[in-house]
Image 1: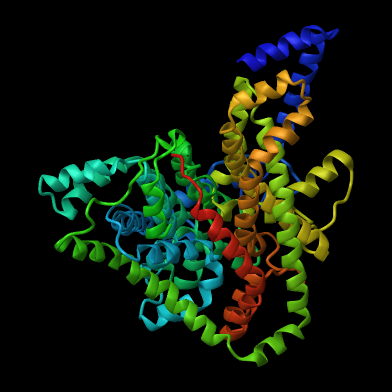
Image 2: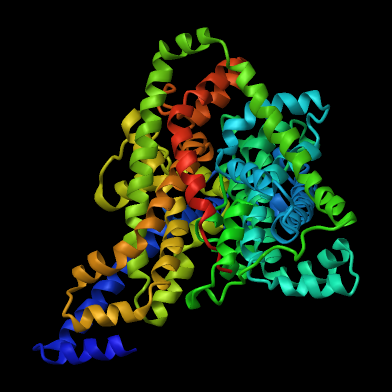
Amino acid sequence: MSAELANIRWDRRQPHYRLRRNLREAAALAFGIVVVIWTLIPIYNMVAVALESRGDVFTNDIWPARPSFDSFWIVVTQGYWYLEYFWHQFGNSLYVGVITVFLTLLIGSLVSFSIGRMRLRHGWIVSNAALLTYVIPSSFLAIPFYRIMQKYGLANDLWSVIAAEVTFATPYAIFIFQQYGVSIPIELDEAARIDGASPVQVYLHIYLPLMAPALVAVGTYALLLAWNEYLYQFLLLSSKKNMTVPVALAQFLNSDEAPWNYMMATAIVYALPPVAIYYTFRRRMTAGLTMGGVKG
Amino acid sequence: MDGAATQAAQALPAPTLRLARPRRHAWRGGLQGSEYAWAVAFVIPYCGVFLAFVAYPVVYGLWLGHAPSLYAELFSDPIYQRTAVNTLLYVGIGVNLKLFLALLMSGFFMRRGWWVKGLLLIFVLPWAVPSLPTFISIHWMLNGQWGLLNNFLWDVFGIDGPGWIETSRWLALGSVIVSHIWKWLPFWTVILLAGRMAIPQELYDAADVDGATKLQRFTHVTFPLLANLYFVCTLLSTIFTLGDFNTVFFVSGGGPALSTHVLATLGIRNAFEVARPELGVAVVMSALPLMIPLIIILMRKLRTMEVQL
């Protein structure tokens, strides 16, 4: 506040300070408009193509001549052969997401409780292993991972995808949980121990409730990771019934005359849940400074 | 973070600045009786995940790509040579341009006013939307014949735009880099914005009293305090971008004529389309000389980072 006052006082000594301030604000506003256009163009394109009527995609309009919601209706009613299992695939994505969140939170919180609170000897080896996993790009592990899933007999199985997503979400979870756990007083654990609580009871009744904000942040991260990730789901899932939505969406690109309006309508339906979740938990998404990036 | 060092630090009287943090994070008297067994049991699930899904694939990958003849074959392949150059350009230009723009944008979002806050909500949209739909949209938007961009150029300026991703390697690679920046600029802007907000206002007040100009405020206050974060962001973004598959795969698809592949997409292509997994692994392994130093520096840096929720 004082800086603003100082600025104003300094400005008053200048001639035309009000004009200058208004000019600066106008320039900022003009820049803001450019930013909005830059940001929205690909999304505008997605909506505009989805609203095209059948056959109008291959025209030179920049806005559909006859906008209609037909393509959304086709998606919702599964009325096109690429979309015949759409809701089933939507369910698959949801299934993978929910189980990934549950396993990531469970495995991650147990490890960070053991290492961060109970101070397991040599626990730093596990933390470093997790950190190393975080900084290895997941796409670089995809080829051997695929071969190994075949060996485990998990080819074309949703559990192979869950294994991949949990593998790449837990390191982030461990990092965030350990750092956040530092802010919870260790005396609480000790008081419970003196009262005769077992480690499991301390974990369930002291650690987990106090970690709630971190659990929400990591849970959101894991859900979005599992929902948005493409490469592993594409490699590991091959049959239409076992596909998740992103894999089914990319299937459209295989045909020569892709029905782009159906494809963009599918893309919008697929993008809505993560966008809603993102804006709901937006404040938690910058957790851990740079660590919050959804990879891939 | 090793035990001895922490204990030595605990023995010292804590300076007042550190009072907010607990001095001791370990259970008093160490683990007793069955507690040790529980502590081990809690770590086992993650160790299982790590061994089965990280360690085993890494070792298996090293074994697949161990033959030196693979690398001789790879390095003499013109597609690979082009891919290596593309990767360096994509990562070098993409990451640095993106982070420099993010640094500027984060300064812009420090402005006061309701519309700046509203603008930030719109600005983060590319980060919120999954990458696949937007990259497919960009791919279609850049279509030379029916895409939105050329339609716009024709309708408004009467210019017949080029086929952005179908005709020229450099146009296609440029399109990929711009798409990458479009997608990830908001994320890094928000990170740097958080870093800027953490700088105490008193420092700026002091700079104002000393008569600092806006540029001096930036070079003498903001940047020195942001430099470490900026460096970590650069490293992290470099590694993420090296492993980025979706942008190239969906925006240009590696085309025209396999001229815009990067290591991540060429590896997958060799393994699954050409059906030579060992050659695919070799492509990925050729990134290791660049990656290992980055990973070592990054791991040292990340262990000292603090988390704010």
